[in-house]
Length: 146
Image (cartoon, rainbow, N blue to C red):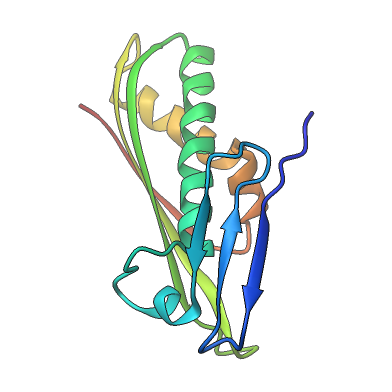
């Protein structure tokens, strides 16, 4: 299996510095990062590690769920997946930590009822490689057919 690479160039201190994250493998772009904007409610044109994790998790979960639906005998028409990754203080060790990930999926699926879809979604949550990598973070799931 392939290895994917991203690179970050950072200049300056944590509070006054900034950087650029480059998606090196795909070459689809370079994105600005900044700690003050990372910790603010409004991203103001920058990305953050949490947003990149959210993107990775939503994509991975969607792929895994489509496989689980097929395995259960269903057919995926469409899936709309969002991942909300929260950052907060780490009271035990200091600094910051991921405090939770909320996955939400709405699906159009034939061949499965709501219970079958929920079971497939729970299986995808457990089996998605990104979920496995993030086992130290509480991951919640809201799954429903539309």
